[in-house]
Image 1 (cartoon, rainbow, N blue to C red):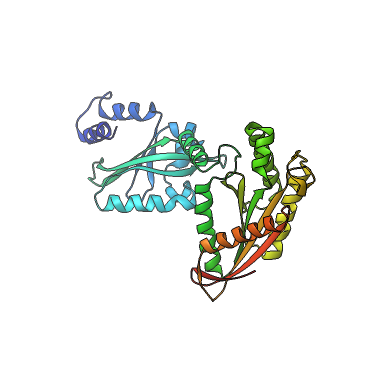
Image 2: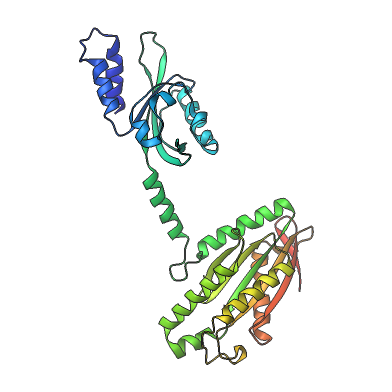
Length: 330
């Protein structure tokens, strides 16, 4: 594409008949599915191919004379600036992805390739940019990314997503000198449930419990993940011990109200119930246990305590933490 454009643009200064270089360039640009821009080195356009109206909703006249800041989403402008620096250094910028604002206010993902060419009688350099709509590809990539971080059985986040989120949330908590909580949930006597009703019913039970947990979480930042087997972990940002206990109790009640029969769960009056360990970490001075692994350990100990004290209950733990380490209190 760029080689063809270069040849056509370089021939514009040669004597030509009406059907030669200028017409060839016009035909190439106007019958191309990609959007072709000719820009000054400051990014302002002097030509935009007609396909811009199909892709962006803007007419060529509405885009000519304007620059990236008029159409590119603000958060994606750094990618444009980085590409411009590469051009100034004599490098090519290919495969740069960013979002362009359509006339109707929606955004379209594009992949842009650009090359500097001398294409005018003045001998001044011009930038030729070819943009391709990759919105469908981006949507597919995002879907695949979500699948890679989702547990196939429950639809909750998987262990990989949980580990990343726990680390990131702890770093954020430490920066803000805030607090966060973690719930570890275990379905009571679940091995007996599988043995009695079969693994297919066991899988259905896990899906029902996961759905009840999702409906019980009110904030977008709260993350529920399948931690392993029948264990579920929930990250609760900016949540103190009392708040974590209330959320744990609400979830336990929601699961009990499912009234899934469980003949082997006497503590739960014959229905599926859960034991919960709730641990809260406060970013404060003092240290002895590595974080955020210390938070996981504290929640696990609280969960063990809940099981030892008769199951179908919530037990709590509190941690005080400084620069990546913590001290704990029951």
